[in-house]
Length: 562
Image 1 (cartoon, rainbow, N blue to C red):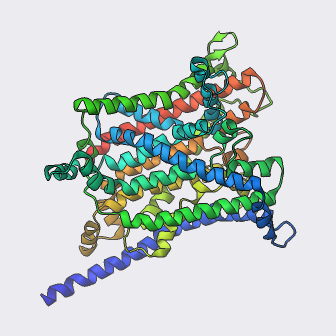
Image 2 (spheres, rainbow, N blue to C red; image 1 turned 180 degrees about the horizontal axis):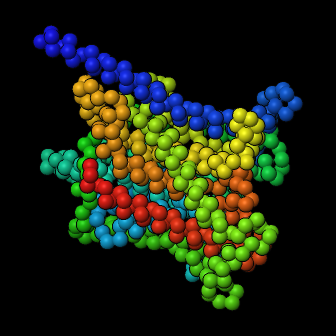
Image 3 (cartoon, rainbow, N blue to C red; image 1 turned 30 degrees about the vertical axis):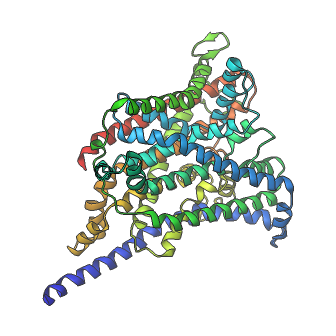
């Protein structure tokens, strides 16, 4: 027995040592990426604002916080983000269950449609919602109800954006949970709700927390929606930073607001990282195709109908408005606005607006590759449960790009990355790098719950048998996480297509992306420019839907492999 112990323990210790070294190696790439392309540009713009004459002016922080208007902005930013997150979870969790557990005709197409709103430029969605809930909008014409003067328009638009975050993040894990565990609890006498609350809900807690965190960060930094639907009454930190930077040219105040935003988001992420670990458990994951079935009984069919109705009213209707307006030419419905996209008028663009389609796709594919590489490395490094506080803190830091002003990041890129050895201002790769910053958190948050749900004893057994960390990942983790990896890639691609805040500052005039092109057209007066903006938005919507539908088919075809 002693001899057997001496033969087994050294490989185990060696495997654990190699695993720790591999984890540190995997962390090196994300740390370097975020240090160079996030921390450095943000620090540069903050220093430019608070150190104008070579000396730090920290007293400016107190001066800014003393303004009642700034305190009101801080309160409204926090309140609307909390309300938007709660409302999104309330509306989207039933959808996550339906997509995870039900099998119905058109499911793949509908899943792609649900994700489309997430990539639309905020200025376009704000305009579409204004047409629905504003003066002369659909609600005003039918029932005389206007919501553009209330916070409800902002909250509903945020649900429109983030519905897919909950459905795909929570539903991705829900679809792989073994339903037999909940059925066993019911056989022991638990009611359907009690079995769900005690068995399924704790297993879903990490994914729900991850989705809630992403929704909160997106709404906490909301810009286009609040600017259009809120008007002068409502303003978030992001809107105020933009106003101070672009309209008032007060970089000191903008820097203070950026620091406040950064500290608030950092505190939230620290709390999230500390509580998430206590909720994580090893789960029994199964093939997603084994858990979905056709609805049974009146209750399940009613739930499916309610979810479909919600998708139709909240998601499809605003999209339908965009499509209708893209064909509503002055001479009657037709393709006039689409034909105009093929011509360069010499004013708004240096090239024909239609070229933005190819540019956006090229940037999106490059950004997706970067995000999957960086995010996948970070998720693999964070998988081990024996990781220390430094690694858990890094887990929270990965989410910071979602909570820091895109305006600040964009300006930071222009200031910090224009001198050797990082003179990238004239390079095409600058745009995909900025887009990947937003895509990486989605890759990490999508893959991490599934990776951590894999029973660690499988990895330990493989290490004891002498498998290298790479082989452990390839043969133990990858078969279970392949589905989450495809979902993560889809999210990164969608985010890259629709990223606007930072891209608008660094995209070259001869290579505009679709969101930048739409914003420029909307910024010019005239029905032709507005119609072209709606046409480009419709094209962006179709491109995203087709890409996501192809992703759904590939993912479904490969489901049986694991």
